[in-house]
Image (tube, rainbow, N blue to C red; front, top):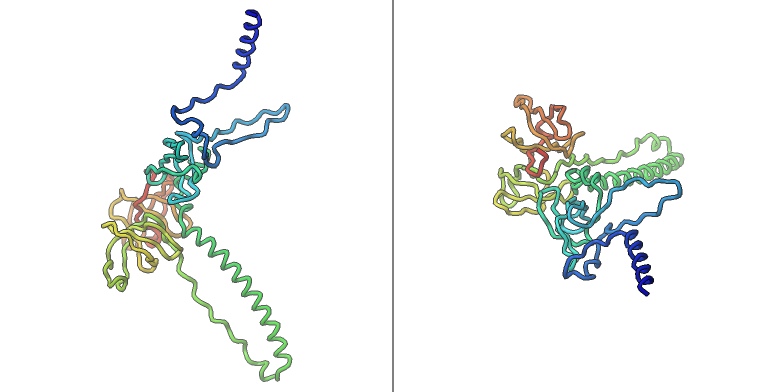
Length: 306
């Protein structure tokens, strides 16, 4: 019996040596720590084929130090880094990449991402803009409308040819009626965290005329919410009610609001007040400088890399 017991002990020890150690559990959490895991909490992979070596992939961890993308709620589409877990309530404490604030978010509202995706997109301000998304949707709608107008134009052209064939030569000489075209809307330059000046004298009886405020959120390509220096929120502010501001100090940041570099943040190196232009260095192109008109840059008060 003693020899058989030693044999079982030897087998158990061998099996334990082959088995990976179980991760430690937080005291008091019990099995509840396994509930309500958010998307990406576990990644399963097919085993490698014979003769193949699997490439090393980054492990996505739902725990302190892990990177996430918020997919719903007040912080939707923001990236952050996990600071802690609340397994009993299925929530995570996330430090947001933009703004640096910590927020408690449901695990169901976050998606685990790798370090490469996080570092590439975490502070891409253009990606966050609702105006940018609305502009893309508007382009698609305009494309569909243009196609529909073209089809209607071709249909009218066929009907016109038939009508002219039946009418007299005098009627056939009449020029076709031209369609009245609406002028295109002005380009959208609204972005979050821009410092702007209110220039509409009629809004709220001119209460905010010539005052400075910050763009809190962009609701559409031409509409936003602004916050005054006193902290008051103003809804339904049209782009035409605002104008851009050029910062007075070189240490203050600017954002390019129109053109090829739209959404990029930088700082002013030199000003040409006579030509209303500035020499600008952008964070993404530190080795280059750009001469930009005052009309396409604006003071930026959000988070920056410098």
